Amino acid sequence: MNTKQDSEINSKNIIEKILQNIRHYPKESKYVISHTNGMCNFEIFINDVKVTKSFNNESFSSGNEINPYLTGNTNTLKVVLYPREDLEKLDGQTEFDVKVESYENTERLSAEKQQNDLFVYNAPKDKDNLFKDAGKGRFEETKTFKLSNVPYTISWKDSQDLKNFDKKILEAKILEAYKMIQEAFKAKDMDKIAQFSYRKMKDQAVSQYFDKDEVQEGWDELTSIAKAESLEFMPLEHYELVFYGDGKLVGLKSTKKDKGFRGASALLCKFKKGGSLTGAELDYLLHIPKGKTEFEIY
Image (cartoon, rainbow, N blue to C red; front, side, top):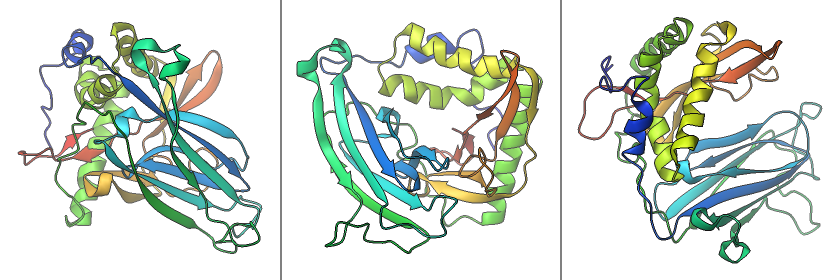
């Protein structure tokens, strides 16, 4: 484990250090996936990294920006569908649709610069227009899609493949990192938090062409958790080792089926906000960057 990861970063300079990496382009496409689901719970992955999930047993539509998950012009979408809790199997009425759209960051209000239906995915139906895999306890499908304008590079893209590593060693390294992260938040050690949060924050800012206020907003969100009243972490138990990014990222996922835990990182906390108790999922992962030999936090 690289315990001195990004040691030059601290809470005072993290905003400026991130801004130094942001580049602007004549065309800055921001890509969004919107989904509609019916009669199922789900997870959505872009390039094998989880973008969003829902296990609340509700049917709804929603959208998520995906720029931080794009590794180039060619990408993959993976959908995983699960039955609602009141059903043991996926129902024939199960529906799941995803589409990729974009808008122009430099002209956000320009309808002419918006691109709809760049890629459309529909869960498979049979000849009677019913969900083709009804009766199963889980459905998974991966599709490749192409985009025309992804000018930046995500830092973990060329990291080492960890799938052949000893699983016990990986688990030990992740637990070491997660415990260190917990202690930093509980101690309100903002310099340490800045150091292990820098890489992911930088990728988000670079990929979404952030300005200073947007970078500051992301940092303020982290500091608000560290400084929150009655901050408490869930015990690091009931978890499983999970690979993301086709094996280049690894973390621990909760195996609990309770609402709020299912499909979430094992690094969960709760705290008081506005007088009421709320929770947060700190989705830190580990990788070994290209040309390096030590695990780093992402």
